[in-house]
Length: 423
Image (cartoon, rainbow, N blue to C red; front, side, top):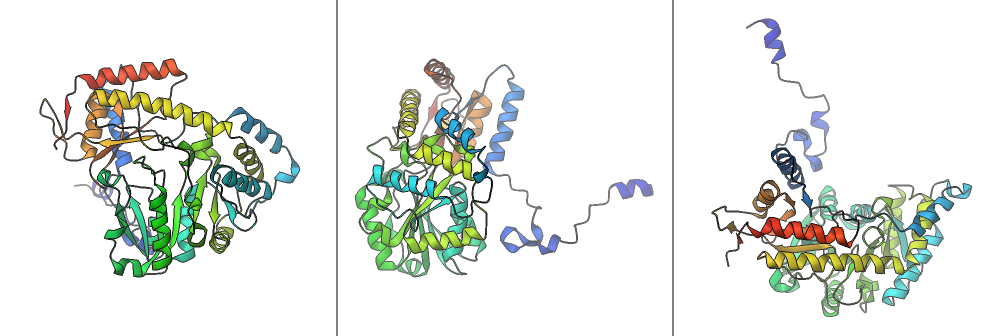
């Protein structure tokens, strides 16, 4: 073998800083993992489906974000505010207009009266709030309880601080509520945070008043802080939207995080707020003050105008309810155990285990790949608490006629598959 050939085959050397990566992200092995995460698997299956069937359009029920732009009134307000010189600077912990609009929103919809100056603080979308709240409470060895399946960010940052995550499975037989009675006392003794999410993503479950009342009682008895993720609250279908903070005593034990994304079509605008106990809000604000310099003031003022216009979430809720009702019918006709969710734009349904022709699926991930590659239908798998598929009604469709056409095509593709479910 020539010297040149041998040199060409030399394995690349690690950079000098390879051993310096923090253990929280993998330490010296950072960047060397070979695990493929589910969303990358979905992307690969989509590429294969398009390559194998270029003539067939993908029907994408995997999209997890609103398909429409923000309302014209919001965009028009942004156009005005973006040209005002007083909005050019750092926002730090937020402007009064947005906090006051958030306080009016909480009072109008939920009867929750908050001091805008001390009990509300904005966040650059809700995701950073879940990254920052563990910094307020978690020391090594402490526990954050989290519902699963769910949004993992608070758990990730809990582990970053040396804490642990205790998983609270959401099971269909318990109406997608965690079994609080099954939590051992030794877990409660180390718990600092309980992170809930209702209306729940991805299960679509909603929480009755008595559940939140039990959570508040437990929080006081066991001494932990409650955080409720209310990102989907304005997409409630089984009654009026309700807030954890409505619960008697809730303002003594926690906070609720709201988002402008789902209920206001403001996905990329990155706006939300944390509301609740003033000392927890203050702690969040202190951590935030050392993490970012606030969202663009013009964006906050446009979001304030959005919060004051109740017609916006009403129209968005009506649209997704209509789409959800159509999807439920199509899936039921195809054999799925599909029911209208209590809220969110996600339909969470048991994954098939096999087909009449002999295909078998050991997990929801396998059924997802089959649906994409064989039928051109994109869903998201969840195998955290049983095997389920998540269908989102945020697909692209210009009008109701386009929705109906997409539903008809979905029904046609599912008709001959013969999905079956083991009892």
